[in-house]
Length: 218
Image (cartoon, rainbow, N blue to C red):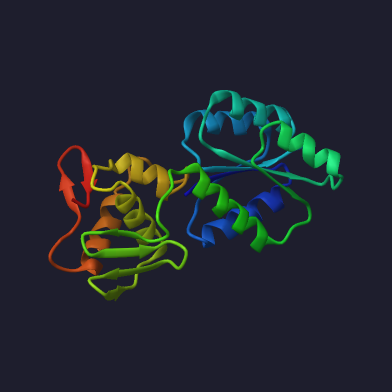
């Protein structure tokens, strides 16, 4: 899952991003509404955590732009306002959820994960294909009943391949969904992570490389 955090309080924004990355999410951070619109126009996000009182371009205007674009990204709006009318106004703008500051980080994570599920087509709790069973909620993987310990990025990559349901996923798409914008687009990190993943999953090989196109689990 890829998340955009748009929050002008830099310490708070960076703290949110650090915590979400620890939950195996790919996270980008911006500190004003103009930068948020720029990122949203370039990247395919699942959720945007949007401070309502952003500078340059107000958070309300960012929310309107997201809704008008028809993008599937879900909006979790943050605000210091605690009144019911303020929360209602935010939801009427098109926000999918609303959280007031200060908030418990555990609640923020739970709300982001719930919105991320809504941003995707409905899927079973566990992903299964070719003898592999991956449980995103527990970050657990089994192959033919054997537990496989994976690092977070390895799990994220495997989950994207399983979600593709046998279709080919390009290296660019994997980089987009599993890593964040600070990753060099010309890096070989996808190939290296795939190599480690294949080794851990064992024989017979289950991830197929389609030369010049991408990867799939047939």
